[in-house]
Length: 420
Image (tube, rainbow, N blue to C red):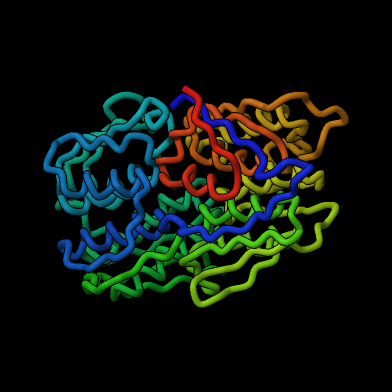
């Protein structure tokens, strides 16, 4: 399908009830970490409720594959985690992906692995995939301390600490500068501890120490995805029905996922959360006139919140979104282009630091057509606009990366028509 047309759930003459129960997709962040740890135990864990997202299915396929080339497609987490995994397990692999993936930097991780003794070379441009991996060198593998920037990608840090229990002397990782997406690092450490790793983190000293102690195989159940839940918070916020109620299944009040911050963020945008035995129930609440949020620890929520605030007319000030520029697309530039189509704008107030979203004086007429830039989060962030205005999403199939059933679930609250 080339596009999907979404229209509001009811006409003004006949207000409709927005009530739905959504069986959310499982967390690909938890799934991908659990899969690496399982592989490092020799595939002896019983992993339950694994994500059906393309990124996770790609991880599963490549962990089982004996092919010399590992094509991760557009899965950044898979690229970074498998680079470290294949190196520490001594597998000779060529790591590659889509053209966009080969434009996403990986030099910081490769430098760190090389310092630890990994034999990795670039096959094209220095600092970027594709890579040739040939395991570890016996002459240098005893190194167990290194420094790495904490402000570029938490996935580099997670990739390193997950393989650390298999290093002869473990690993002490010193993080320099600011630490971005810290909840994702903490998720990694908690999963490692669950599987028996000896991990100590000193956030004041900015060090993570992992002892050379193998993982213990155990069963593990994956939680539903809080990133996926964020789109339903936006649906609830934008619903014109004041009695709107959406039940999201499989979420926990005490989650390992940093994107559970959406509970606090969306309270200002008019959504109340009540945790139940089966998940969380969303209902309508009062809306603030403005909101300021630092997305350093939850960058994947920025697009969703920006679009929601734009439609509701809430002035939003964003910081901590620098990492969005090296995601599936330059998400800052993509937001700036697409928000214009729904009568809003994202303005850079302080260079590469502070941004502001606000409505424009004149709204466009007719349904907006949103480009998705091969980015699943662009498609899903703009979809809730349909609660108030007809909207067309180009290339809607991109949602398969993290939430394959998204359009089927959206059909529970809006009219969804596929356009070929």
